[in-house]
Length: 311
Length: 205
Image (cartoon, rainbow over all chains, first blue to last red; front, side):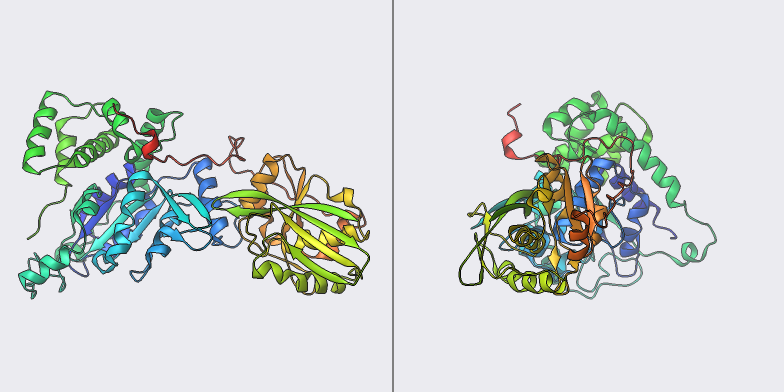
């Protein structure tokens, strides 16, 4: 894969801490390709995680042939025509949906605005709780749904809004209404927002070969190892799983960091959740760098991943 | 004669024990299934009758009643064919009931007596181990999945004839070898609660 170094970096951070990520860019920039390369940099699953995943696939009757234990992280990419029951689970006897099948792995939603609004909104609660409870007349079932969301979208219906080469042919109204298909609360739950611009000819045709997935994965594994040590015997697996109590415990800032985050709170109009998510994200960036303390550099990188207004 | 066989249902991601009770009495030959069975389970009457006949055994010419307990849990799916067939064979004294003690059986039957894949075998096997069962009869296709559970003898069954020969000791089936995946694989049976962060464990602090 050529170019898009900053997107690869963002994906690396997302993989290291299990954070959600949204990629915005014109068609053909490589969003889908980048997302599909994600499993190659994800860390291996522990036996307990593998067993959780295997159990879900056993109940959903989606067990791959000739395997006993699923050892690779799931990568689910449902089509945007999916119903909300298909996404979160449902049926007279509740069965796990795509978000549970993506447990401990990746849920990739390509062309995010094309998904039904109701379909996207049902994900809000499981994205916070990491589980989904489905109640039907005959009883309720709880399924685990601790997934990492990767979403991709174009900035406008024609796809070229903000592109440097080709001008956008959409009216401002249609751009706004396109972007409004994704609600603010959902965007607030996505830690990393990254733009994926077109790749220019020089990069595309150059012989420079990008970093192989294996070395990225080594860094991700190292960062995960730090997290494993940190969370020890608790149920938490990665930084994205932390609750407010853990954030307070593990994400302390120094004076400069506090000043920076105070400024950001007012300028970016961060919500309380946004504030916690920035801290969790900077914890992951510090883990990737091998640092025990979060320094302002880490915080600054985390802040620039927050959503911005495009219009 | 009354016989009990253990089977399992899957509710959510957890297994739940279902006792298959089979009773045969003299009277007009009939075959009834009670205990909130859904359509697929009702249809298992036809499959069980044909499978027993085509496996070279005899379906009893008695009044056969099958009860799936607990009666308030709705039984769905195809996993009850094999335990019902085993119960009928034991109740008509073609196999001995004590061979089925401390064992769980799941599997769909084909008309020719071969045993087909069912879903959710892993949670069922975990349940069998938790409930102190010694062995489990599973469809051959699902045996690798079931053998992830430690301390449970998993017998892979590909047909009803094969299972009857195994039980009677004519042609024993060796238990499935568990694949070793990880040296620290001791805590298998309990499904670790996912790191869920419900409102119930959020605190004002």
